[in-house]
Image (cartoon, rainbow, N blue to C red; front, side, top):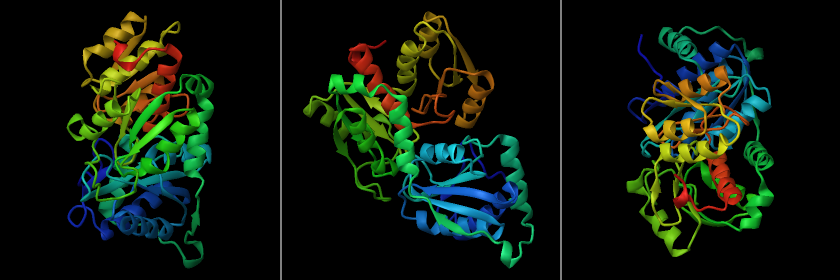
Length: 359
């Protein structure tokens, strides 16, 4: 049996590994796995999003699932929506940080979290066998628009943050949306928090004309320059589906994902020690800060689903990957670029220190 799922979903080049036929069959396998119910489906801005969403939805409805169409939405917004609206599950049509020729699928459980490896294997078995339960014409699913996912997501983040503290600081922030799903949430969210916002790559475009969707330092020269030119307090870079956030400090310097995790952990553990979960690939800077605060670090194998599930199991206070995927359990145990950005501006506001002064 071929393995479909990697460390974070199914991904490949469209027209090669990922085709409309593949999307249809995966939709049938996912629908059979969930056994019907209500499934939320969202996409990022890739040019193949419509093609693959329609194929996926055909497979889901053929298995009796009702599909809620969320439109272009960050993956964490879909995850939060699935959990809080008590849907049966969800699927994000996205290839995250990969170039425009890629696309893929990320399947979400009813708790809003990534599926476990055992659950992924069950979908792989169904997909490989290609034998799905017969659904009569009168039990096929239907599609329903669900345009409130992004507003629901932003409301939840704003409600969890100290917006008064951020507004008092009058922070100036430059956000690079990568022409991805963040264009519909990131600038508006930061303004609602009380920031003055400059936006880069704020037009939805699946060819990613401004920069590649992966927010590594080599792709963020314009963001660095704009932070300096506008004398901003912070730069924020998202990937294609906005589940990651990387930061540029006020001096125009790139902050690695594990250092950002350490910065957040240092403040989060102040006066309340707890456990931080991170993969074995994270640098020692995270453990140094956590131990200094009296907390503990638990290391996992690589993969955001592994980190998030371990966080939930042990009641961790924070989690994250060195690639910029920070996880805050107060909303959900999932990589969340929007919440990470909000927590970072909140941290700058509450401490009164620039990011460059953090350890």
